Amino acid sequence: MMLRKSIFIIFLFVTVSGASQKIPDSLLSKSYEELRNSYWEVYPDSLKGSEYVKTYLFKAKKDHDTIKIARGYQWFKFISSKYDDLDYYSIYNDSIISITKNIKNHNVYPAIAYHYKGIFLYNKGDLEEALNNFLIAKNHVEKNNNTPLFFSVKQAIAALKSKIGLEEEALKIYQEQLKEIRNFKSSDIDKVNQIDYLDDYIITLSNISLTYIRLKKIDLADIYIKKGINESLKFNDSIHNDSIYYYGFVSASAYNEYFKGNYKAAIDSLDKAFPHETDQNSRINHYLYKGRIAKDLNNTEEAILNFEKLDSIYEIHQDPVLELPEVYQTFIDYYKEKGDIENQLKYIDKFITVDSVLDANFNYLSTNITKEYDIPLLVSEKENLISQLEKEKNQSNTGLGILAGVSLLLGGFLFYYYKKQRFYKKRFEEILNTEPTKVSFLRRQESKKVHDLSKDVVEKITKGLKEFEREKDFLDHSTTLNSLSKKLDTNSNYLSKVINSYEQKNFSNYLNDLRVEYAIEQLKTNKQFRLYSVKGMAKEVGFNSPESFSKAFHKRTGIYPSYFLKQLEKISSP
Image 1 (cartoon, rainbow, N blue to C red):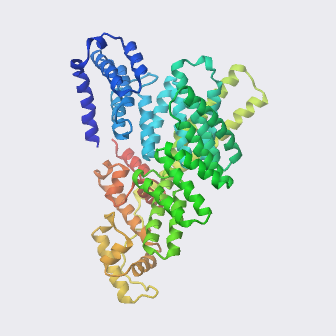
Image 2 (cartoon, rainbow, N blue to C red; image 1 turned 90 degrees about the vertical axis):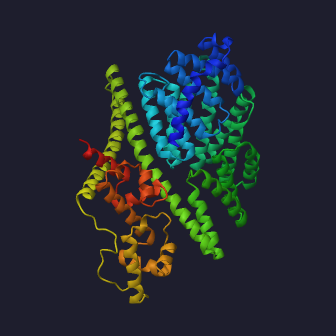
């Protein structure tokens, strides 16, 4: 994929260089400003718009104007015929990053490209990398005072907080943003920015209403849903020829009616909005609430049907939502009642997997948002307050109280953060300098009695497990309790009992610990292994996802593999 992107980026430059053969003089004679205005007049007509963009790009390339080249790519991706193809769309964005990443003191680039990259990754479910890109964008916009873009970055941080269940923290950001928007006077906003202003206002109303729904504050949610419906209708009448915002609020109304117990009203609104909302999150929510309603009405078969549709969407996009464990628990209970062990195990595995992903997302995002966003924000607020108090020479109790409160809050954050860092550093040194007690049947010479199993059966299984460890078959990602029991010519119940008796853990934890210990050994002794990303390491040692690897590593060691790797790199650097 990276090779394809590199080739495409080169291709973009080549096609722009040779574009003059296809550009008429009438366009080449236009100024940049004229081409820009012509582009926006025909937007989003891709056929007409592309001619203006090609001309703009050709002139920018000829003038060696990096910012204008980046701007041309920015416009090109908006009118691309493959706009809905996120991979294709992101190639243009990566081109912008490639040519602008070293630019200093520009209020748009490369910040906007990192911000859009964060959005792409967020929509693909890669929340860790999404956060990393949002934080890069944040650092740029803070230095260069791009208020509108900083607004969007804060909105993205709030969305990530909401994604991991930190609804109160997300709500605080959304409410601050609503206050910022209302402070604008309509007369101060030019016609070009009027659309962005209304966009931000309606999106913020939507975010607040959805957050109140998740907090089960249905009366407050109702207020913002009604405001949103009224504003979206005005917006559609005056600017847009579609009703996407309106139907978003119709869906929100359905979710809120569900929590009121008004199932008929909820179903009516869900069905009304469904044809107009085609994105994956809207579809997931549609089937989630349809399934919940059916389940509450004891229509189990219909609930399962809706949850199956939801699960099929998740299987395609792999972007977990907080409600997935609830859905999988419904499947587990359903198949348990039917006596269908195979499907019961299937959804137990899915439950465990998605729970580990959600847990890993929470640990990474909550830690890094606190470190890279919340704490710097508090530090900035504290500095502003100190400056204000000094400037006004106001030593009143109120002023000191505010300062003390912020300092106390900041102190709490810093204490928590640095305490965790000290613990991580201590654990790293312990792992690096001591030989941990390993999970292994290879080191065991003695045999143990296992309840209800003969000595011969136990010895046969332990011998097989030693061979399993010696050959490092645990690195095979397809290994399961059933597959290994068949390989050892025993049954899964016997195998599970032996592992539990010897190691005091279930098969899944035994397997994960073997893989984690192997990963630690490789990190300590194999420099090539350290070149892998966490995702690459996970694959090498048998995990199906970086999230499950990170969770297992943390469970075994108390720290995350990314931290362990960074510390190794520090001590290895000359």
